[in-house]
Structure formats: structure tokens, C-alpha cells
Length: 185
Image (cartoon, rainbow, N blue to C red; front, side, top):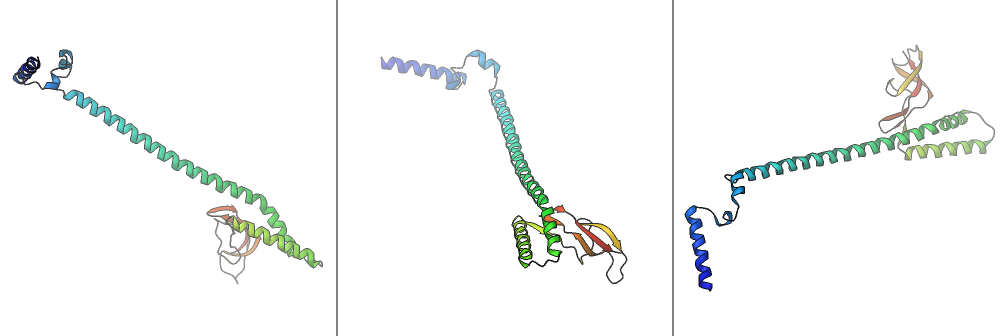
């Protein structure tokens, strides 16, 4: 019985060899053979589909990367803006304390209390990264100074700030408030 089975297999293999058809294609129905005459169109279609999916994947990955960068930048911008808005709300307090320090008083304890309060506010602003814009004696810079008065004074150089009416502040590269100054021409 086993010999008959082997003889049958040998006969099928000989017939396939005569027709030059590989053994794995012998089982493919004639309908499929007609759709793919050389078998390369299936391969090309699969490669094209793979290329499309790969392109789609790369575009999706690039979109996600752009989204991640954009949201990180927005988050930083929102944080900086919130910090600047908060500091701007405290600047009138800073101005009032500065005026109080300039006033003469007979009460030493009161003066000491105002000085300590001002020092505390300055320390808090420094911890937040807020800096005073240097103005007095500096060359006028319209990017950080607001000239509200001009004076002719030959003893100082041209475009030099001679008086500061209100301090200006920056937080990093962002100007929170421009320094209000008097400029010599």
C-alpha cells in the first residue's frame, strides 16, 4: 500500500516537472493563475500598499511630533504670560512701597517695616525671575523705556536717561512694564 502511494506521488511530481510548474503552484486554481499571469502583479500591489501604509505612518508620526512640540511651546507661553500678568498685578504695590520709602517719617519702626516689606517683595520678584530694567544714566532704549519728558542738558550725553519716574520690569525676554523716564536731548 505504501508503495502505491509513493508511486502516485512520483507520477504527480514528474508531471509537474514536465510542465515546469513548481509544486506549490500546482494547487493554485486556474482562475487565480489567469488574474496574475506572472505572479509579479500581486507582489507589486503588495509593495505599493506597503509603501502607502509606510508613508501614512511617517506622516502620522510627523504630525504627532509637531503636535507635541506645539503644545510644549504653548504650555511655556501660557506659563510665562500667567507669571507676567501676576507680577503686573503686584507692581502698584511695589510703586506705593517705593513712594513710602522716599517719604520722611519720625517713626523708625514704621520706616523699618516699610523697608522690610519692600525687601520681601523684591525677593519674591527675584525668585520669579523678574528683573528691574536699568534706566538711570543709561542710553534711551525704546524697547524697554517710555520717554514721557525731554530736557535739554548739555552736562549729560544725548539720549541719556536723567530721571526715572516709574521702574520698568522684565521677566526673561518679556517686558512686563516699560520704565517711565525723562531723557536728555
